[in-house]
Image (cartoon, rainbow, N blue to C red; front, side, top):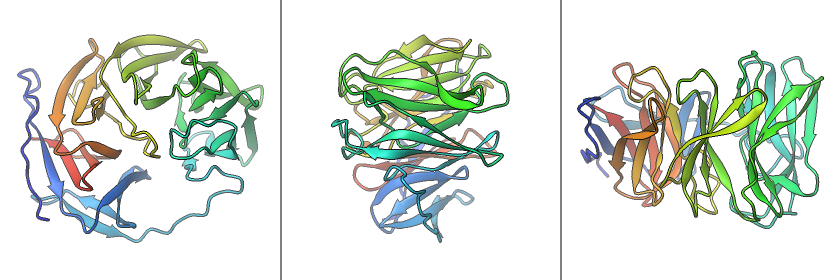
Length: 326
């Protein structure tokens, strides 16, 4: 398959003067996943891993010799061990349980606890009661309150009340849940975080969430301040997850319009377009890019010197595309 520049211009703004294009990248097999490790995306094509080289006129794959790591004891199957750079060294979901029968992530096994290893080598565990699970695979580390210590953002699902976004932090020497959004109100109602950053430029950190990406598709901002999560602006018609898959990273955070404030890229609800959204000065689309097939995988991000980051995405037809602005 030769690389084809599709030149699918979906949105041109006089204010931004930008043209976004989609290019297919030749792959040796169907692309089934994209992971980001140490800030760099790697492509799973036929069970082998590849990086993407954008140095030439045409994007191409570069083989990666990846050594698979053994998961920690009692870890959630297919859960990710996240490495931190501040006070938390590693964190992962543990205590697999089948007490919740939703299976939104591909099976009926969810996590009953969260394991934390701090930079000084101490360990701690946040254990949920029998009324809830962590319906999640990858804990998210971010300093939400600016104190130099990372908080942990997770999806907590109540068996009878649905999902909530929970913030875990250290209080009096122990990690615990310190804030939650209201649960969605009924079982099998799930939400998926899309990114963390100061999206509206007010100096406070926001958690972007897609509420019920399979049924509702509302992109919402929740601001963490004074130990609470407060609901902010929202937009409709988004999805950042395919039901039954483990790809929870179908979104990307970057400054796409060059105004110094982070923006979000994620698919439309039907996953036929990639939408790039800004929340400053108001919630709005700054680009909407037609895809040649439905979005299927996590989104990978590649930094560029001459413009906003390029985005990698695997599609439902098994192909790989790079999306970049010219």
